[in-house]
Image (cartoon, rainbow, N blue to C red; front, side, top):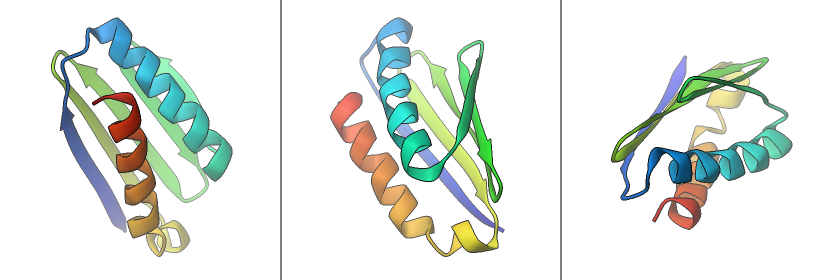
Length: 91
């Protein structure tokens, strides 16, 4: 099972970071047909072959996902998209 683990430093407040993660989540949900739900400061997402979360902390965003076989073959593309969105929204 492939995994994605991305940690990003940021200078945003938790509220600002949450808005940025919402934009990322909407885009990724549309592109990869993900279900997303907030639990505190953690956005859980899932679909067949994907299970993960985006955790917000003061000064850091942590994206972690477990990918099934088919989605695992697209790991590089998925990581690239996540990083692109984080560059746009967090930095």
